[in-house]
Image 1 (spheres, rainbow, N blue to C red):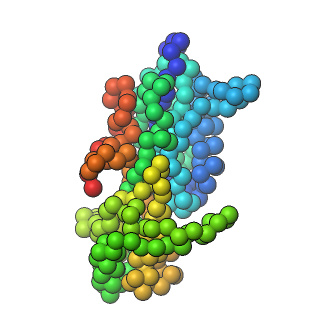
Image 2: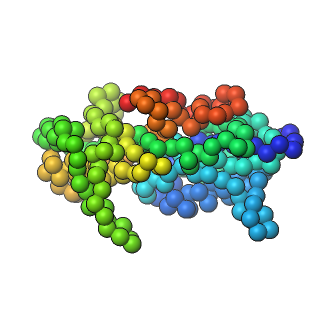
Length: 257
């Protein structure tokens, strides 16, 4: 590890699998911060007595959903190679959480939490041929509508949101692998600075349209496949924005929707 005076920012792409998917957003972020300290990274702190780690997080992931693209920025007080940071983090992380890639950025680069406005999801729903036909019809009717009202119940308030405006892609995944049963859907949704549409909200509305019982649709397996900054018809990965050189280990790339 090389030391130096110039502060930097380390952007890391993590996974969230297995039992880690049951961690809340605060529990997951706290686990990442503890792991970063355990990895002995040159972390930057602020606040009273320098007690607050300087970080920026990607949008929260609902409990129970797995992901291959959870992003966190760590402020660094000195230089460490991205590949070395990735190795140290991988050794320090608990089971169910992995490192996909790391990238160094200038300290004044825009934080990841202020970049992301779009998320991509993959949904697998166990069903029979009749249910698949009903769901295909529901997807067509959903996309034909210009507005779809949904009552979002939250602990402190209940409000009506328009789901349709935040759904940029909704389609069947015809390329599912041979060991996957049931129906696979892919979704591109608002998530972040532009507002948030939750995948479970879209699933619930589709199931209602297709008259699929709750005991079937609430067992769907949801996986976040990417987080992006939307630029016209392009989806740019935060791992590719404002970095210093190529990211170590890869990371999700540019996509179109």
